[in-house]
Image (cartoon, rainbow, N blue to C red; front, side, top):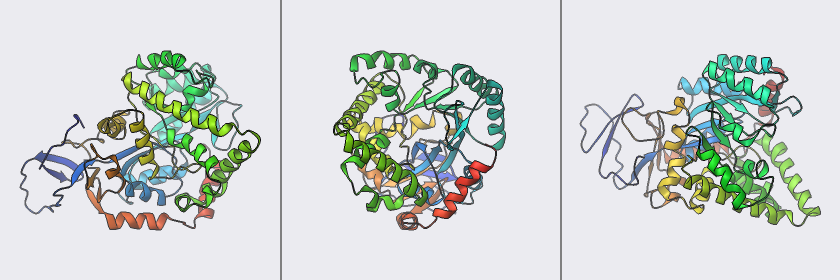
Length: 419
């Protein structure tokens, strides 16, 4: 992933899950040889914005070539998943998770951790680091005093921040060096632009972001586009694809989101066009971010609404291509760009000596055909190979699973245990 080219007829030696050597010819006694003749070896994909609700979803990510995920709504169950992944007890993408979403005192919701003062903010950062969360997630409603405390303590505790922008501070405030990525192209529209889809007004915002040499941007435009999809398809909740959504999320969040937008279009016939226009403007945002040299990192917001775990990354990547990125530049957003966002991810994202062997074997060259990533013939997780038959079985197990009550109990745990 250091240049837009294919290295032909190479051998890659993987030892104990790490890429040991790359050369034209490698001879090692007693080592299994995988014949990938006429196929392509590429780094595994990284989805930098997901919401994981059960372990079935981990299989869906693997089946779609996603070999690492960044979960951005942390709960106790995610710490258990992380522990099992790190100890090789389950087959899963490499797993990173933030703690609970940190918000201001008035942004009430069972999905948020409401901070009332700077001292409480610092205590929570220390606690999340001690409990084993990898990252801090900031959300709506954080005023500058509390936000400053979050940033200060995160620096002391050496834990990176991922920011869903807060409307209580200026957008440029999120360019602090402790904040490694900003989430959602739609937040540029909603906050600094105040829903004015004006490319002239957009440019100074892009210029400001480009002055930061430590900020990546995670657009997550698929989840927004799916609002348009919900309004265009009244039967979307009954579609076969929605069988891959966690049953609790489908029953509650998917239905609530569908009802919201269905009812909105009944009283406002222009909303469908406005949502489509904003989606198209998001493509313009991506184009300008890219031209300004701002690292784009691929994230889908999968696991909420009708955004399906695993499968959605291919739609997100296709949108980046539509925005004007080359196939190589698109591939970078889900590999090397993502891996450079946090130091804890630096061993991922490339086929290079010393990197973790999270890899895909695909039938066609993704530098000319992005769709080749959609159905990898083999996936390597820390050097362990999973063939297509195994990957298909993950999809089969996830389809229409019956774990609504178990999911509800895990969510209830999050409300009962101190966050």
